[in-house]
Length: 258
Image (cartoon, rainbow, N blue to C red):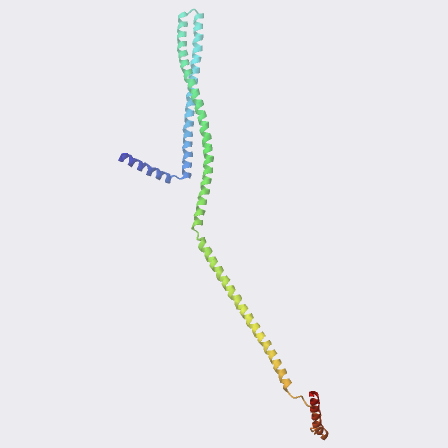
């Protein structure tokens, strides 16, 4: 491959890429419809011109037929009057118009066919333009929807959702920690109160027991109106009886040992 061929291919590729990037779907659709409408205008003008030519040829053909009929009558009239020479001239004039009429008939048939073809093409083009307009509106709606979706997707992609959610999670964790500290402080305060009340209850029991012990160690109270009696002296009988009982017990033990 030559250098110029390669350079031509590179230039063509770059131009095609630029054209593809420059193509706006909405503008291209509008331009396509405008071009079709321009073709429709030109086709209508062509149909109108063809119909006008058809009408003109048709008039010429009819005029030729009228002349043929006229010179036919003239030839008959000349023969009736006995003027054969004049009748021959009339027939020659009739032949001229007959040849002209035949040519006009051929042209008229062609023009009729052309006009019918142009009319069918015109109807087809009008139908295509109506279809193109409908498709254009549908495609424009799809393009609008696609652009909106693309913009929304770009907005969603640009949002730092993960960072925001992380911030929410951190704040939630801080709130949970603060709630836990508050709950712990409340439990500790309640525990201190319970401990103090338990100490009060324990000290009350000890104090009650101490008071009971002190009361048990005090001597019995003496009534104030009771006279103090002197201590009784042991009688002589008791003193003399104590040795006798001792001797008696000793004798019993000796008897038991025998």
